View 1 (cartoon, rainbow, N blue to C red):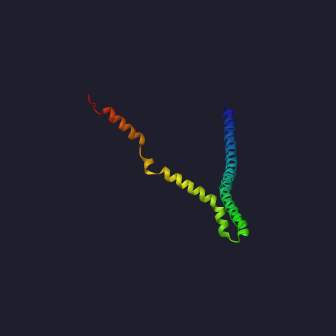
View 2: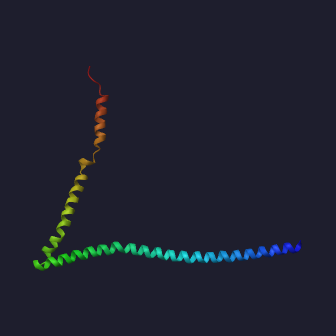
Length: 129
């Protein structure tokens, strides 16, 4: 019986040793996978972050190219810049006008509340018999 207990104990120790080696290999693999994933995520965020910057720079370089192109027939960049900027100025004026109308004091008054107060005042006011 003693021999069987020693064999079982040896098997148990060997199993624990192998499981520890397996867990160590698993953690090493997880660490390397996680490191690769973090590196990939950081590079993806950097790429996605540079896309809007490149688009904005491209837009402004395109506008500058159009101004330079129009400056050749006019002989000056001032009228060319005015022609290129005119749609943007028009949109800014329209948006400013709409915003000013929306922010007018008359639009800020609580009309529903005033109507409700008038209606309640008529309902509560004594009627002459």
